[in-house]
Amino acid sequence: MFEAVDTTLQTKSADERIAEGEIALDKADYLKAEEIFSKLQREYPNDNDALRGLGDTFAGMGGFNLFSALNVLQDGSGPYDRTNVIFKLNTLPIQEETLKRAISLLSTDIFPSQADRITRALINLELVARLLVAKYDTNHNHKIDNYDEIEFSTNDQTTPDWSTLRKDILYGPASSGMTLEQSFMDLFYGFNGKGASWTFITPITKQTITGQFTEINKATILAVGDLTQELRKADSYYGIDLASFSTVLRNLDGAD
Image (cartoon, rainbow, N blue to C red; front, side, top):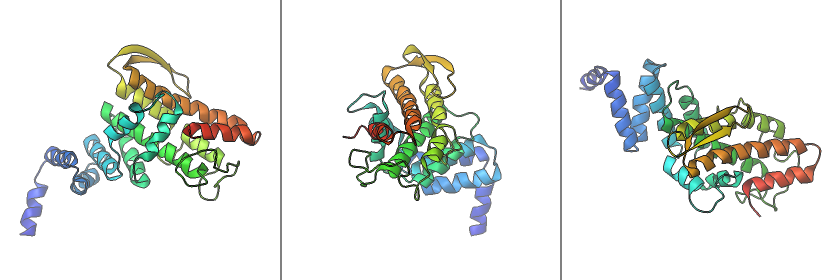
């Protein structure tokens, strides 16, 4: 009986199996989706649909929800174009290692959809904010605030030292597989298409890029640029001025 069932499954085309996996994703049946897309990815390692499906599966398994993340970034108390809003993503429950696998897979897609660009960018923002809080939240209240004891070597035994952490987040190779510059670009291409014309200057490579954006989507992209600049500002004080270094880090979270 089992041989007959297995033979039936094997006779299905790749497109039919991808469709089944997408139905499983729509139903949040991540175990079934993982089974389908994992097999497809092993059989067709360069197939974009299989890679995308497995990436979206791990995103769901890791607790990522696109609408929840956008709601945190774009609804509630502003300003929405500053670093502080990104740290509100720490309120969302996620599984970091699973989301890193999701980004790794979604980043291999050579024809990413706008939704997948936004997904992998926002996952990276969640991971960056969580990493910074894990390093500098010394009183374990899930914030970087005035009660944290920040030194140049804070938590170096359990997290990367500042120089490594800053380099990974801004320039790579990051453990998540993405940098803030890539998140900035992904949000640009993911949100581009509706609203008024706006010209951005990318935070690291200083490229000039123009598109059409609603005010709130423009603000989210600018928040990523602001976080990049604040981390570079903190780096300018590192090893030189502890008070200024600590102030910049505390202001990232906007916590009193």
